[in-house]
Length: 56
Image (cartoon, rainbow, N blue to C red; front, top):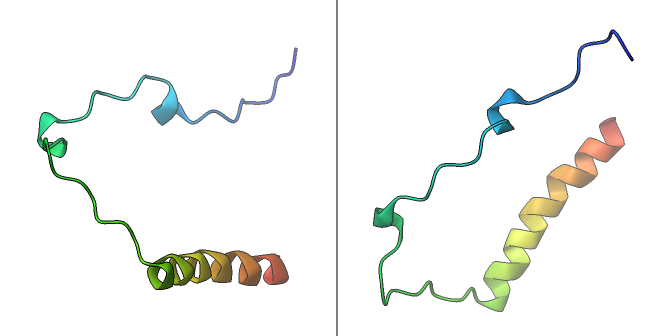
């Protein structure tokens, strides 16, 4: 058994509370993203990952 403290995130130790009923609106659907919006989102997510990998 190790004497080192465990790397535990205590915020995740309990189940997530149920979502608010205000978040669920019946009949309202999100609009699908266009191809250009999807491409832009991918680029925005990829850029920080690439720059972080170079500096680390």
